[in-house]
Image (cartoon, rainbow, N blue to C red; front, side, top):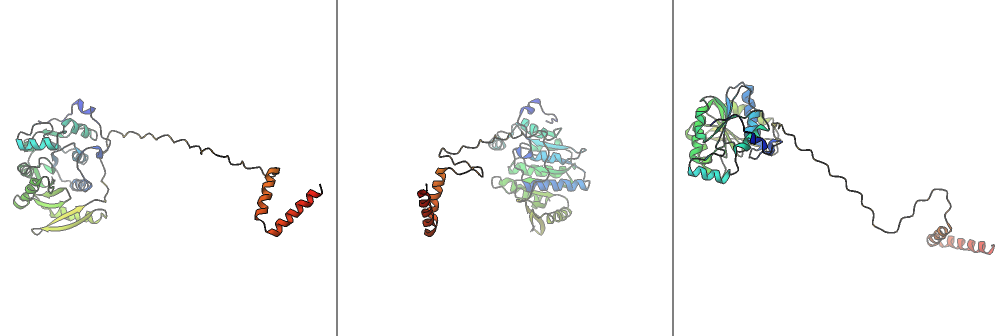
Length: 324
């Protein structure tokens, strides 16, 4: 079930040169929140490992792996190419993730990291056989969208998290998976899960005390002019809501593959002007104007000068001819 090393065929797949090349849905607001929670825990030397249930092509896993300490363990659990073992879940897998393969995940992850995480290939319900209780400080649940599976994942993660560990639930409000919403809020109202904050796609909560995290998060949000936020109350408990549509992404994991250099297109040759009469070349200063040119100048002068001047010129020309 667990395999830490990728097979050689993974190296033959296309290699992403940046995180945005990896398929998946991991928006700026959630990148900022993952970054903030993981850094906040590390700054306070919060002990614990990392866990992700449902990896797709590895986008969020790659991000989490870049924030992991060297003495920590990162476990990723996903069906990948395995059968779902029940009819309803198999139908969802075939519809939504027909192209999902473990090799693609491994190739993507190894484009950014030297080693794979601990991979559990199977249903998320088996994760407790591979991860110790009270050992996880940050868990991301993004596996099945079916109510009974999400409910089971939440209960499993509750046992795996440390006292102040943080759990993230994806698609808690998406219209195409109401089972996730039902399981999320049921955990809040009946399973002791306490909300910290929400983005447009993910719910962040803890079974510990959310107040210190919310206080620190609000201080950080107030310093960010590019992240909108507000505080709402649910059953008299505060909940931070935030959006980061105009914010920049946090520091991204660096791929070991360089982007192909763009070869500049050759400059297009200047087009020749359309065929037509050539303009007269400029004449060096001091050279006399030919006779034909003088006659043209005289004609122009006679047309534009005042009549009295024109008559004087005509009279002078007649006298000059008479004297020849």
